[in-house]
Image 1 (cartoon, rainbow, N blue to C red):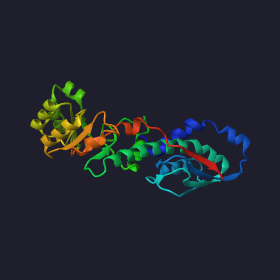
Image 2: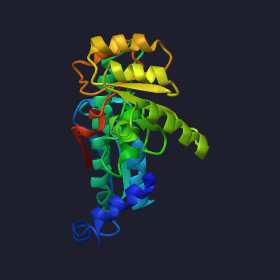
Image 3: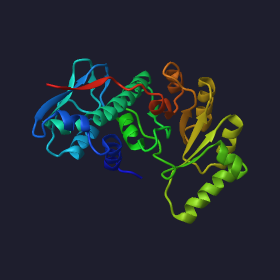
Length: 278
């Protein structure tokens, strides 16, 4: 798994190549300057830590002065930070810092909207694995800045039995039994979650037991409420599938524990931010 610093290093290599020839050809090597990160749209700020790492990797001589922090509510005209240092280096880092911050702030903003819609209920908003390849750590960080929670990070940190696993395993009971046997044989300590699509599958899971969480996929709010009552607090519950900002309150009021929303990371409009010299 790539670290955040490795992601940044690879992104810089992609963008810079053998040099920022525009800046190198037009700006004296010894020139220094200042710039500010200007907010141009309402939302929730995310990516301050990532931007700081970008500037540090490009040139340790760049000094960043944060004025806001990740998770802050922002509005047009706000200044998130200022930087000063070699002008060529600031320009070299500019686009990548903006790319990260604009997308991360977009994710944090939409996450905060979902979180606000279910305020006062017991439900918590979860992200999914529907992330940009190699950007998962950064995008999941943004979800947390928006007040959401991270689901499993990848295939390795939780057993999540979905419909295809059940079909290939030969049924729900067989899949659950095999998962528990695997954990025992390998000595791994992982949570087990299983997806169900209807009440028949839910009854099979309740008969089998040996899971930690049940994902109720594409249940209507009415059926979700019935399913949560059937489970009766014996296992954690998660709602998923086609839940939107307009409908999420209905799902949250069923007493479900978690609501996973893939749109947090895969249907995002970046927030409008700009780096301006001053």
